[in-house]
Length: 193
Image (cartoon, rainbow, N blue to C red; front, side, top):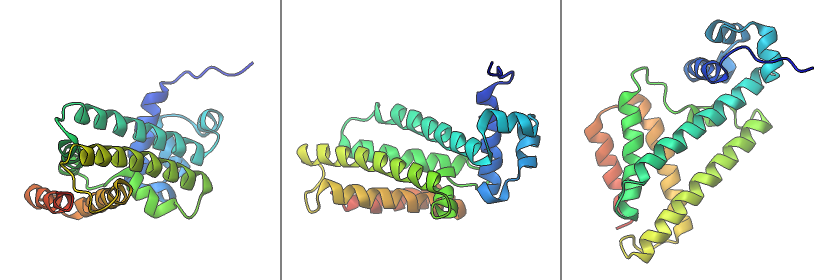
C-alpha cells in the first residue's frame, strides 16, 4: 500500500524553490532541501525520487505560476502591441521586486543546467516552444491589425522578442533602474512599429 504524504506538497515546493533559486541546482545540497522543507531525506526521496525529481517539480510549479501571472496581465490589454508591452512590463516589475537579485529561476537554470541534464533540457525546450508560440500568435495578430509591421515574419519577431525577454531578465539581475529598463523595452518594441 502506497504511503500517504503527511505534508503540504505546495509548501514544500515553495520552500524548495527558494533554495534552488538562491543557490542554483548544483549549489543546493540535499541537506539544504531538508533544512528548507522540514522533510527528512527519506521523505524527499520517497515523494520526489531524487534531487532532480524535486527540482523538476519546482520548475513546473514556477512555470505554472509565471503563466498564471502573464495571463492576468494579457487579459487586460487592448491590442497585440499592448500585450507585448504588458509582458515586458510584467518582467520589469519582477526585476524591481526581486530584492535579492536572484533573477528568473528558469533563465538561471537554462544557463546552469541545460547542457548537463536531458530532463532539464527537454523542459527548457518545451518552455521555449510555448513562449515562442504565444509571442508568434501575438505578433501575427498585431500584423493582421496593422499595428505591427511585416518587415519580418511573426516567427522571426517571436524569436527576437523571446531573446529580448531572456536578455532583459539577465540584465535585471544587475540593473534595477526602472527608467532604464523601460527605455530598453521601448527600444526593443520600436523594431515592431
